Image (cartoon, rainbow over all chains, first blue to last red; front, side, top):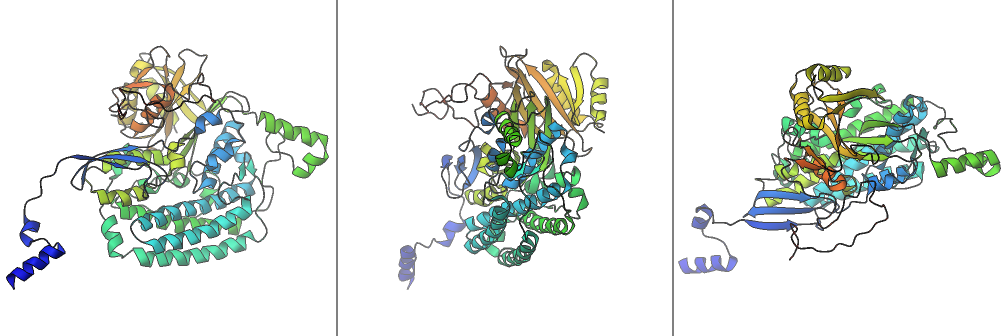
Length: 415
Length: 166
């Protein structure tokens, strides 16, 4: 009896209890390379880890694999031509980048307050739709990496509803380039408000389903609770903003602290976390989606009629019908396209709330139609830089949820 | 509101540390003498009237024809007072160095690495000044105005670089 039990244990590979309770096995430091092409590395990023057993003793996160020379290209592009580049910064919330960039140029031109009110409302609506798609991508992908594939499919299904509506607005599913200096390129299509409100009701149902799947899920909670805790003072010192900063209790939301567009007219809350762990980052994002939907509903109810772009021939292109039928409009069109909008010399740092946090644009103008320097302050660049510091002492398995909830978007981080 | 910062700076530094101050488009800015860069940064963070505990952004600008050629630009924010300021420090091409502010705001680590990578400004005292967006073998600093936009560089392995195969 005794021997047969032992032999069965050997066959099954079950360890003797003494081995489990015994002292830790001696380990030696080992370098471990993760990425740049790894299924859990959103975009392309490489991590060079020093591990002892499963424990990370040092982490070096190497970004830059998606560097596309945004700033260099921008210096050779007219102010209008930069919009498509901004789409490709945070490519899961392109509208928010469009908003941030357009507002920076408008401040340099001194026309920020003159943008038609309807255009400002439209910017808020499409921006908040983009924020929801941003958070859905982050949470869906993050949950999938922990094995919750259903959540991923639910989230992407709901995200697609918003992309369809944004496609109706702008003509493109992902790279909208919808905003223009001084307004937006076209008015909302007919019946847009009704469709969006119907989708919001459906999205609320999806979020309810996702909550049921994840909030009390043992596997999900075990890998999120208390992992990668960041304190509020660390968040401030390291420049964390957005959901990642707010999860630590650092209540900084540009929409509330320094309201822009018409955000001060809407009633919404800024969710903050209390622990600063991965689960807080998940909860903050879920709650932000609900708040974004509240903003959209209020904006749709109060949006005024009127033009959607400034009536200033130095800034806005003439209507297409006029361009094709009158020589004056054709010349105006040609000059605006070839020379660009002339922005007076000056410097501006303009910041808005992007999907990942404070999205800043620092533009230096020399008075021509092209910027001397067009710098973007990418929120996830700062958010990722703290991981070098946070990952120390965690286990290899903690990297995936931590990295997922930091929401690195390669296009924005590497530019 | 933010005028407080510029007034405080002008009052606290009278020895020529602050070379110029101004306001444009609602952004307050101050030009800091290069040698006092870190001291002014530290002061702004610790002084109870300014309390700039949050550094948003650090980058450089190539002015090309001006002397000194480069400006390092730092954008600061106070999470308590909710005000902002922009600091400049001129850095000449011949001696392209500036004190690091990583020990004041640790989050500036990667931002300084990026300014070094793209503009070639070396931050003295930086704990880990490596390239960040470009690869180690890259020659030159691509955001300098004299680096042609169309220039292409094949990735050639060279010995003696960290992470390079011999």
